[in-house]
Length: 451
Image (cartoon, rainbow, N blue to C red; front, top):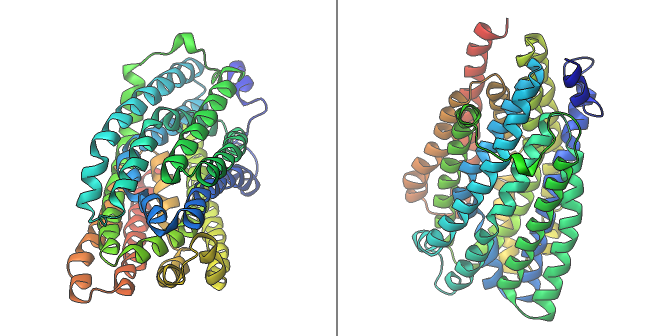
């Protein structure tokens, strides 16, 4: 136990004391990190939209669904890593923490290499399947191929951040993003405006920035004290820990993939409305990311706090973690949604200079952004279930509620009345169904487990 106390020195004690303040302190840097990362990614969109035209904007902004489709399975493994390490901390098992940390970083490198290969092979075929306009396709394919070439860096950052989150440290990943984000913006301006490299410049800037953040996260881990300290000479793959990580992470990753597949179908439908619609939708999507990152921050807080307390047998605190995280998530996303919708013309004009694109973006914001307070209700609840070890249940229910329902909508309701407004209504409709399913599962499982 003495070694475990050393692990927690300077870290957050999730097992004792009031929860609200600690959850906020955990979630805010995490939300800031994600929002900051999206701001820097949004700089890609803003720079090409302003200085390279609507085709370049559509090529960069319309690629997020393809990227997420291929990346989410592997990012799900980082969720598994977070849960496994946090559980070991709650149980006081120092040796297993060390073994898992080195397994996690090894997995990150392997997943990154696999994604770099898959991304380059699948980029153009996927874009064609999505009905990407012919004038946008070459630029979009180039962007994707360069972007996926930097996947080893992206995976190292995500998996390394998961290790730090497991002990409550959400500040160091924020430091990494501040530095890498400034580099990203500077390179965007240099390569796009000065050297006229358009989407190639944006992609190169992003990969370079990811390399910097990966290097910094590795530096923090190698200099950490206690059981999460990383020794690059001890990198290995422990079968026992891999199985546990995959057991928790694979359902989360699969959920993300299927979720992204439904978004690919939606993006394909948007593509049918032309370049201006793609550009406007891409501009509005940035603000949906901002609100989702608040949701994600409180979801990660719920996962980590639940994992440690569940591992320590403190089931009453698990219930409190759920209530506090869900309420804070709804309030945070609701506030941001009101701000973005109230000033939608201003916010959209930051990314799209063309009036037609702004008008298309406004349609999306009025049908999706305004309801963005809803996802925390099922995301946070699903996070608590994962922290308890029930990863498959929220994955299956979310895949049905937020994925299958959307695909059915596209081929029925949208096919009957093909307008952007009808297409975008699928989001709040699917959220309502998913909330009902996940909450029902949580109360059913909670009555048996959290006693």
